[in-house]
Length: 210
Ligand SMILES: N[C@@H](CCC(=O)N[C@@H](CS)C(=O)NCC(=O)O)C(=O)O
Image (tube, rainbow, N blue to C red; front, side, top):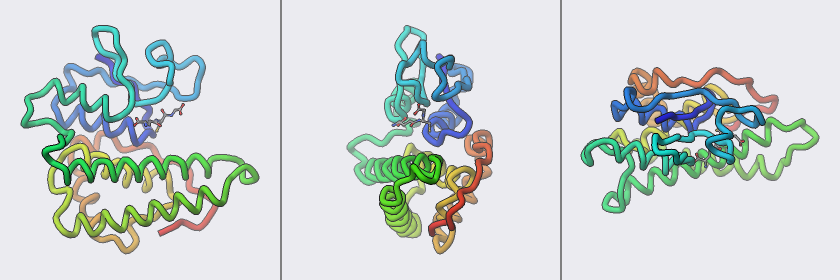
């Protein structure tokens, strides 16, 4: 099967890390696709045109991070799976919380990429507050021992934090959040994390939010 990704995508990074964590490199070919491009190799597989997209050998293409993780998980034995089930409500809550933070940061980032006169200060302020609020809650959770297992929530957390360091530089999450910083630094040496670091993007023009 083929996993389409873009090197800067934090969603696709979750799927790419999952391939490595699950030991599926021999079964899943990871291929780069261009985004927002009518000539993208992805479009014949997925008219949505977003990554991650997983083209299965049988012809179906699964898109959106969580369904992609469901397929990858199905390829390994239950004990090794990354997505928490409803029998692990705290882990599931963590995964949803981090995905929600990532969705908000993606909106914030998209707003900052518009020409200055097209940006919405209201949207930027809303998303900045959301990111601070969730990051503060995650800091407390990690300090209390949360995110100790390498699962989908952990992958999503590492991906969103790395995205902010490398690409969405408007949010300096490390400031005042030592538990998140320690988790991220420890994670960085892990092969799935080290092999998927996004390329550096440009910083914003506004002072960063903490
Ligand atoms: N909700 C989707 C979000 C995926 C997403 O927004 N991917 C971005 C890259 S970070 C994308 O492919 N954008 C291209 C586009 O919007 O056309 C998921 O969970 O996978």
